[in-house]
Image (cartoon, rainbow, N blue to C red; front, side):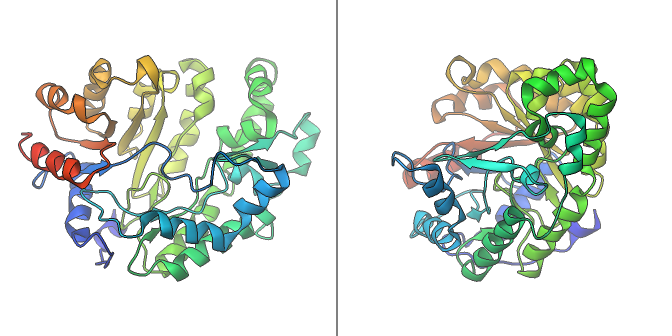
Length: 365
């Protein structure tokens, strides 16, 4: 991991301990602890930067998402006067939604208040000829503009990350549609595999394009997950895998996951709920998957103690893991789980509560 060894200092208002925070993050990847586990004070969906509760037409929604000045200014206002305790890094991630990578090839996006979605257009296999990546694509150019403007406004205030890339299976699902793609597993496995492979073809060049932009701006590598790295950091995921068996994950997902993370210095796999977690053994088998982001879900799925065996499975595999829990769950969790390789995400809003949590986790040995 040669790139990871190249480090630099950043002056960020409200985060004078940036260097120490980065040391804790790098130690976390190695399941080591400097003085305490890293802690991020995080509220779900905080990264979404679009007003909700306002009735807008589809055209108005798109205009707002595409308003570069508005998006960056709104982020600046959201962090104004804040002090970022623990490993809570202020990161502006240029965002047009999770299907933007698919849109780079010709898919059209619909926009809502806090997310966007693609309109599947590969109705039959001949439609693959419509797929074409271009740096002149309107969505690609808009992500470039958002990145550039973020870099122009960020100095001393926040970090700028790259957008949310979903190559491979999730990209193919955006083109094909989830229901049809599940049927393709049985009806057209060869064509599906070719489509997934096509959806990976340009990934590294696209990733490097934006990583080079942010590195040229003096920024570490980061994205919506809000965890920077001095090397190349990526968050692979496959939401489609919640719909398929481990047998089909091994066939359609695992080979491409291995390919996706090879060039990366750090990778954190986004395990979105129990459906994806059924493939955890296979995900953990990939050497360059360094960490897991465990997203257990809401309601009855939310209490963290029921997921301790999963968390310990990740630790026993020699991987780090992000654990999302409530402040009220922290004592029992600390009494049950060893701290090595744990990155806590805790929705604590007040400075007093955050400082108390940081003091508490220093006793976790």
